Length: 435
Image 1 (cartoon, rainbow, N blue to C red):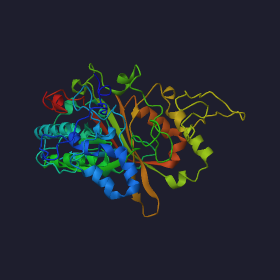
Image 2: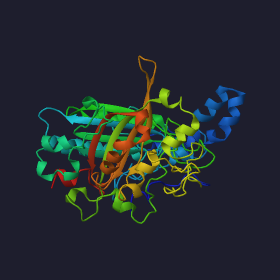
Image 3: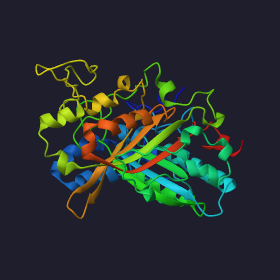
Image 4: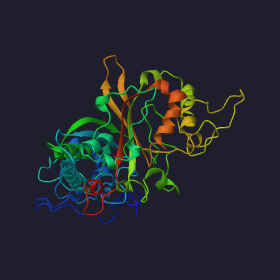
């Protein structure tokens, strides 16, 4: 069974796990999931208490004998073991961290294997709502798993450092140069890559710190970026995410229910190299949005740049967000209703020989630059069975005439091989490092 089908446990309804008795001291064996029983009532009572005063709301959270059930956000748990690594087809989380490491000078295959073993043990514990180990910082002690996922990948240079170049997949060949690239090499690539996602910011930060601490002397941080998305439950109904331009982003994504989803996103069991079976390739791009320029555009012009309505994501040719674009529709002026250079038209799979990728991005905001413009945009992450057939042809076409190009700047880039999920008793990458 794929990770996407068994990724989340349903939030407790009815007889939920109870919090520890007031007289009991929580021992190390009690998971954060159980400890979160003390905050379950905040989802309802906390709203009313807020009007009466902060002290009452705090008491409802802190009371050691509270027996309210877990909130749905805190209780959701994603499985660490499985055919695929978590964090690929897992529903998008509200907080994300991307971090790349380089192996330390002198470190090789042996040190890399030991590191992946440590990281896998830590990720498995944290995703289950347990402490990271004896050195746990306690940052997320009172939180449940909160849909935490920790995903690991290997960069092109990793295989040189570990003397495994004969096992490096051709799909990891460096991406071609694009005319819109203004890449910072210090914030690009890396030997090892880790993606962390969660629906609670403290849970995500806790995992980030644990992963960094586990690296020890074996690897050092090359770059790190943090992002966010809308919090689950913030809208009346589940919706496709919006980016910082205000546009619905991800409408054309492959769906888990699609018959060819696995084929497009994951390396088949019979694929090569064998250690990548069930894995995927992640393209990571830091894309700065030139928001001051974008926001000066009238709404109708913004919609022509994208090819979709800003309000609901419907194509300019009519319908709803999920209505298929009518690329052959023309207006009374004789021009295509969806302009020839509209982003949605150029990126459409039918315009790229069926090329498709699973976009799973986070927005970011890193403050205000010296010129007063926001350093903000998209931490673009896309997943595919083969980037040569997924990301590359689409980006090449966008590079040649996408109307959106005038409003974005690609500032960092990376490509990583993300092996399949570990079986019980395995660590991520074991089939590569010990074969």
